[in-house]
Length: 252
Image 1 (tube, helix red, strand yellow):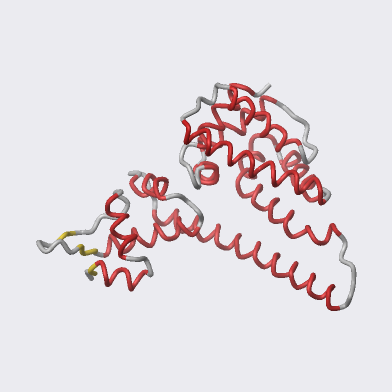
Image 2: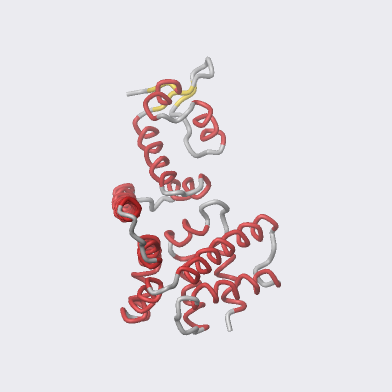
Protein backbone atom coordinates (compact mmCIF):
# COMPACT_ATOMS: atom_id res chain seq x y z
CA UNK A 1 0.00 0.00 0.00
CA UNK A 2 1.17 3.54 -0.77
CA UNK A 3 0.60 6.55 1.46
CA UNK A 4 0.76 10.25 0.77
CA UNK A 5 2.70 12.31 3.30
CA UNK A 6 -0.56 13.43 4.91
CA UNK A 7 -1.81 9.85 5.16
CA UNK A 8 1.47 8.63 6.64
CA UNK A 9 1.38 11.48 9.13
CA UNK A 10 -2.09 10.48 10.30
CA UNK A 11 -1.12 6.81 10.41
CA UNK A 12 2.09 7.28 12.40
CA UNK A 13 1.44 10.39 14.45
CA UNK A 14 4.56 12.00 12.96
CA UNK A 15 3.91 15.52 11.66
CA UNK A 16 4.28 16.25 7.96
CA UNK A 17 6.91 18.83 8.93
CA UNK A 18 8.97 16.12 10.63
CA UNK A 19 8.56 13.78 7.65
CA UNK A 20 9.83 16.50 5.32
CA UNK A 21 12.79 17.05 7.65
CA UNK A 22 13.53 13.31 7.67
CA UNK A 23 13.58 13.45 3.87
CA UNK A 24 15.88 16.47 3.85
CA UNK A 25 18.48 14.85 6.14
CA UNK A 26 18.33 11.51 4.34
CA UNK A 27 16.72 9.62 7.20
CA UNK A 28 13.47 8.71 5.45
CA UNK A 29 13.17 9.26 1.71
CA UNK A 30 9.79 8.79 0.01
CA UNK A 31 9.52 5.92 -2.44
CA UNK A 32 8.60 8.44 -5.12
CA UNK A 33 7.83 12.10 -5.63
CA UNK A 34 5.01 12.94 -8.05
CA UNK A 35 5.28 15.64 -10.72
CA UNK A 36 3.16 17.77 -8.40
CA UNK A 37 5.88 17.52 -5.74
CA UNK A 38 3.83 15.32 -3.40
CA UNK A 39 5.76 12.64 -1.53
CA UNK A 40 4.54 9.03 -1.45
CA UNK A 41 5.70 6.22 0.82
CA UNK A 42 5.58 2.46 0.30
CA UNK A 43 5.84 -0.57 2.64
CA UNK A 44 9.64 -0.30 3.00
CA UNK A 45 9.37 3.35 4.07
CA UNK A 46 6.61 2.51 6.55
CA UNK A 47 8.84 -0.15 8.13
CA UNK A 48 11.76 2.28 8.24
CA UNK A 49 9.62 4.93 9.93
CA UNK A 50 8.58 2.37 12.53
CA UNK A 51 12.26 1.59 13.17
CA UNK A 52 13.01 5.30 13.49
CA UNK A 53 10.27 5.75 16.08
CA UNK A 54 11.51 2.76 18.09
CA UNK A 55 15.01 4.26 18.25
CA UNK A 56 13.63 7.71 19.09
CA UNK A 57 11.64 6.19 21.95
CA UNK A 58 14.95 4.89 23.31
CA UNK A 59 16.52 8.35 23.10
CA UNK A 60 18.79 7.78 20.09
CA UNK A 61 19.57 10.91 18.05
CA UNK A 62 18.55 11.12 14.39
CA UNK A 63 22.06 11.05 12.94
CA UNK A 64 22.85 7.88 14.87
CA UNK A 65 19.57 6.27 13.75
CA UNK A 66 20.44 6.95 10.13
CA UNK A 67 23.83 5.31 10.62
CA UNK A 68 22.20 2.22 12.10
CA UNK A 69 19.53 1.88 9.41
CA UNK A 70 21.89 2.57 6.51
CA UNK A 71 24.47 0.06 7.71
CA UNK A 72 24.50 -2.83 5.19
CA UNK A 73 24.74 -5.26 8.10
CA UNK A 74 21.60 -3.87 9.79
CA UNK A 75 19.43 -6.78 10.97
CA UNK A 76 15.87 -5.56 11.51
CA UNK A 77 14.74 -8.64 13.43
CA UNK A 78 17.72 -8.42 15.77
CA UNK A 79 17.08 -4.70 16.23
CA UNK A 80 13.42 -5.34 17.06
CA UNK A 81 14.41 -7.92 19.64
CA UNK A 82 16.81 -5.40 21.12
CA UNK A 83 14.05 -2.79 21.29
CA UNK A 84 11.77 -5.28 23.00
CA UNK A 85 14.39 -6.13 25.61
CA UNK A 86 15.00 -2.43 26.29
CA UNK A 87 11.29 -1.70 26.61
CA UNK A 88 10.71 -4.66 28.92
CA UNK A 89 13.58 -3.42 31.09
CA UNK A 90 12.08 0.07 31.09
CA UNK A 91 8.71 -1.35 32.10
CA UNK A 92 10.38 -3.09 35.03
CA UNK A 93 12.03 0.15 36.11
CA UNK A 94 8.73 2.03 35.86
CA UNK A 95 7.01 -0.64 37.95
CA UNK A 96 9.67 -0.18 40.63
CA UNK A 97 9.17 3.59 40.58
CA UNK A 98 5.40 3.13 40.80
CA UNK A 99 5.88 0.88 43.81
CA UNK A 100 8.17 3.48 45.39
CA UNK A 101 5.56 6.22 44.92
CA UNK A 102 2.85 3.94 46.33
CA UNK A 103 5.01 3.17 49.35
CA UNK A 104 5.63 6.88 49.89
CA UNK A 105 1.92 7.69 49.62
CA UNK A 106 1.13 4.90 52.08
CA UNK A 107 3.70 6.18 54.55
CA UNK A 108 2.33 9.72 54.27
CA UNK A 109 -1.24 8.55 54.77
CA UNK A 110 -0.27 6.51 57.83
CA UNK A 111 1.87 9.37 59.17
CA UNK A 112 4.87 7.05 59.13
CA UNK A 113 8.46 8.14 58.64
CA UNK A 114 10.03 6.39 55.65
CA UNK A 115 13.75 5.73 56.03
CA UNK A 116 16.09 7.64 53.77
CA UNK A 117 17.38 4.33 52.41
CA UNK A 118 13.86 3.29 51.43
CA UNK A 119 13.20 6.63 49.72
CA UNK A 120 16.08 6.15 47.32
CA UNK A 121 16.06 2.37 46.90
CA UNK A 122 14.11 2.39 43.63
CA UNK A 123 16.37 5.04 42.10
CA UNK A 124 19.52 3.18 43.05
CA UNK A 125 18.10 -0.09 41.78
CA UNK A 126 17.31 1.60 38.50
CA UNK A 127 20.90 2.84 38.28
CA UNK A 128 22.18 -0.69 38.95
CA UNK A 129 19.96 -2.15 36.23
CA UNK A 130 21.09 0.53 33.78
CA UNK A 131 24.70 -0.17 34.66
CA UNK A 132 24.12 -3.89 34.20
CA UNK A 133 22.42 -3.28 30.86
CA UNK A 134 25.26 -1.12 29.56
CA UNK A 135 28.31 -2.75 31.13
CA UNK A 136 27.25 -6.11 32.56
CA UNK A 137 27.92 -8.63 29.82
CA UNK A 138 31.26 -7.17 28.74
CA UNK A 139 32.57 -6.59 32.27
CA UNK A 140 31.53 -10.07 33.40
CA UNK A 141 33.19 -11.65 30.37
CA UNK A 142 36.39 -9.65 30.76
CA UNK A 143 36.79 -9.36 34.54
CA UNK A 144 34.41 -11.96 36.02
CA UNK A 145 31.13 -11.87 37.94
CA UNK A 146 32.62 -10.86 41.27
CA UNK A 147 33.71 -7.39 40.18
CA UNK A 148 30.37 -6.57 38.57
CA UNK A 149 28.38 -7.91 41.52
CA UNK A 150 30.53 -5.92 43.94
CA UNK A 151 30.03 -2.74 41.90
CA UNK A 152 26.26 -3.22 41.86
CA UNK A 153 26.19 -3.92 45.60
CA UNK A 154 28.27 -0.80 46.22
CA UNK A 155 25.76 1.38 44.35
CA UNK A 156 22.88 -0.10 46.34
CA UNK A 157 24.83 0.70 49.52
CA UNK A 158 25.36 4.38 48.72
CA UNK A 159 24.02 6.88 51.20
CA UNK A 160 21.57 9.51 50.00
CA UNK A 161 24.35 12.11 49.83
CA UNK A 162 26.78 9.85 47.98
CA UNK A 163 24.11 8.70 45.55
CA UNK A 164 23.27 12.33 44.73
CA UNK A 165 26.97 13.06 44.22
CA UNK A 166 27.30 10.04 41.92
CA UNK A 167 24.33 10.96 39.73
CA UNK A 168 25.29 14.65 39.53
CA UNK A 169 28.82 13.66 38.53
CA UNK A 170 27.42 11.51 35.72
CA UNK A 171 25.42 14.47 34.43
CA UNK A 172 28.46 16.74 34.64
CA UNK A 173 30.54 14.29 32.61
CA UNK A 174 27.85 14.08 29.93
CA UNK A 175 27.49 17.85 29.75
CA UNK A 176 31.22 18.44 29.44
CA UNK A 177 31.54 15.74 26.79
CA UNK A 178 28.82 17.36 24.69
CA UNK A 179 30.36 20.80 25.09
CA UNK A 180 33.83 19.52 24.16
CA UNK A 181 32.60 17.73 21.04
CA UNK A 182 30.56 20.73 19.91
CA UNK A 183 33.61 22.96 20.38
CA UNK A 184 35.88 20.58 18.47
CA UNK A 185 38.25 20.22 21.42
CA UNK A 186 40.90 17.49 21.27
CA UNK A 187 40.54 14.70 23.86
CA UNK A 188 44.30 14.87 24.30
CA UNK A 189 44.05 18.39 25.73
CA UNK A 190 43.36 19.67 29.23
CA UNK A 191 39.60 19.19 28.96
CA UNK A 192 40.12 15.55 28.04
CA UNK A 193 42.35 15.11 31.09
CA UNK A 194 39.76 16.70 33.39
CA UNK A 195 36.90 14.61 31.98
CA UNK A 196 39.00 11.48 32.47
CA UNK A 197 39.55 12.45 36.11
CA UNK A 198 35.82 13.02 36.56
CA UNK A 199 35.06 9.65 35.00
CA UNK A 200 37.59 7.98 37.29
CA UNK A 201 35.83 9.59 40.23
CA UNK A 202 32.46 8.40 38.91
CA UNK A 203 33.76 4.82 38.63
CA UNK A 204 35.24 4.77 42.13
CA UNK A 205 32.68 6.77 44.09
CA UNK A 206 30.77 3.58 44.89
CA UNK A 207 33.88 2.07 46.45
CA UNK A 208 35.52 0.22 43.53
CA UNK A 209 39.33 0.12 43.49
CA UNK A 210 40.80 2.04 40.58
CA UNK A 211 42.76 0.22 37.89
CA UNK A 212 43.98 2.31 34.89
CA UNK A 213 44.10 -0.76 32.63
CA UNK A 214 40.49 -1.62 33.42
CA UNK A 215 39.51 2.01 32.96
CA UNK A 216 41.02 1.98 29.46
CA UNK A 217 39.37 -1.39 28.76
CA UNK A 218 35.96 0.00 29.69
CA UNK A 219 36.65 3.06 27.54
CA UNK A 220 37.29 0.88 24.49
CA UNK A 221 33.81 -0.58 24.93
CA UNK A 222 32.29 2.90 24.69
CA UNK A 223 33.29 3.16 21.04
CA UNK A 224 33.06 -0.55 20.15
CA UNK A 225 29.56 -1.35 21.45
CA UNK A 226 26.58 0.47 19.97
CA UNK A 227 24.71 0.43 23.29
CA UNK A 228 27.46 2.46 24.95
CA UNK A 229 27.74 4.71 21.93
CA UNK A 230 23.98 5.33 21.83
CA UNK A 231 24.00 6.20 25.54
CA UNK A 232 26.78 8.79 25.35
CA UNK A 233 25.85 10.05 21.86
CA UNK A 234 22.15 10.41 22.58
CA UNK A 235 22.30 14.19 22.14
CA UNK A 236 25.65 14.90 20.46
CA UNK A 237 27.34 12.38 18.19
CA UNK A 238 31.00 11.74 19.01
CA UNK A 239 30.84 11.87 22.81
CA UNK A 240 31.57 8.16 23.28
CA UNK A 241 34.59 8.35 20.99
CA UNK A 242 35.86 11.49 22.75
CA UNK A 243 35.55 9.80 26.15
CA UNK A 244 37.33 6.68 24.86
CA UNK A 245 40.19 8.69 23.39
CA UNK A 246 40.54 10.87 26.48
CA UNK A 247 40.65 7.92 28.87
CA UNK A 248 43.12 6.01 26.71
CA UNK A 249 45.36 9.10 26.75
CA UNK A 250 45.01 10.21 30.35
CA UNK A 251 44.07 7.21 32.54
CA UNK A 252 46.88 6.59 35.03
